Length: 191
Image 1 (cartoon, helix red, strand yellow):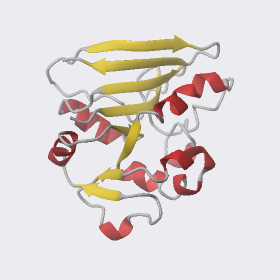
Image 2: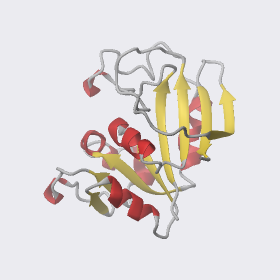
Image 3: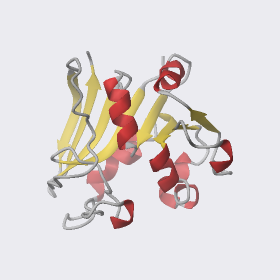
Image 4: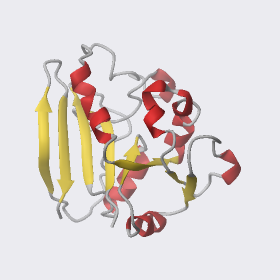
């Protein structure tokens, strides 16, 4: 069985909307770099994840945001040849970017569940707030790798839904706090 890992930047109040910049839509876009001292060690989680990553998964909106940038980005060069899965009921095959590794469109949550049953290593979900909420509600996410930033954003896309569902229990695998207020938290979903 493959492990499904959500990895992302999240505000203290659970918002993951537009961490990289205002072009992504949130009025406070770019909150990952604005007003927070940059410390390379606070972002070391992203490098550490590469050892475990055997495939990437995106929702349609995040795929459309990342696909024009990541294939040519030195920061994301390690991802170039990894298999990628885009979960979308509307994206067409001809909308996929060439030269960015093997690409597969999954049409439903059930398709993701089937993929998890197969052989292979961990699949990491980047961005993709709506997808993360849907897969969490379906009990398909196995681990959360989070960098929590010392900001409160109020409105915006939330990592977790407000759906009335059974409780999920998480076990802290590791955590680390950095002098700039960022906290790394890695949780396994245990039930």
